[in-house]
Length: 248
Image 1: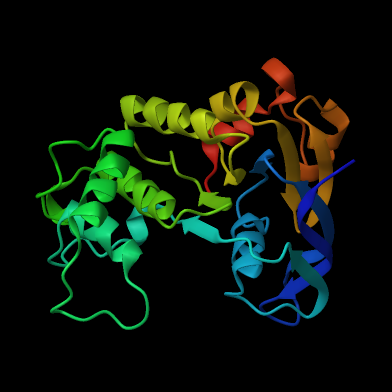
Image 2: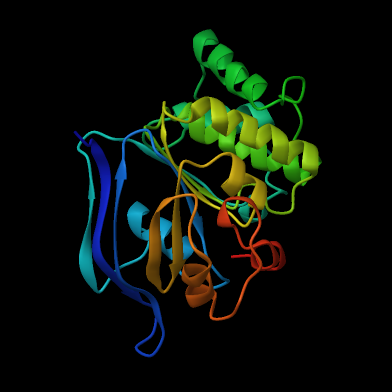
């Protein structure tokens, strides 16, 4: 018997009257799934995550999330204000704040130990005192994931977590996601062919509307239709040229 944790039903989002971002998109995500979301630039992938988070309004349709579930969102590190005077440890500790933050708030030893555990999990041990402006792009991206995990979510949304990071950081991020798969429900926007062919459990192909949602293997005609042009396929039916050359 299926255990649906997230349901998107006939969702339509328009930023302008002439340009739909999403049109009549419906999909169900089961608890513990690892869903990869692919599609061309501007195809609505980030909009879908933001709609789930309640960050954008939608004109029609509905989004249902199982009661009591906690969602964490990981944007690309480029959205981080790198000049803000805060250390890596303080970024994680901020996940434990409830209500308005207070500059005199004192964290417990237990909270600090827990924060260090998340830093270590993402390979950031020894960097806890570094200011975020001193971290590399890959380190910042891993820090955002560590903070998201510190919120103890049941649903984790990631928007291109391996875009523009070094190969070692990319491998580490996907190794961490592999350990979380099944324990959390993960929705991952990616153009990383390795991620699609080797890590995710299911695939959603999105370009304004949903072209496909199912197992990782899919036919070439579906991809040609979604991208509007022929694509070359590699292992598991992933379009290498398109995924390599475009970003959300």
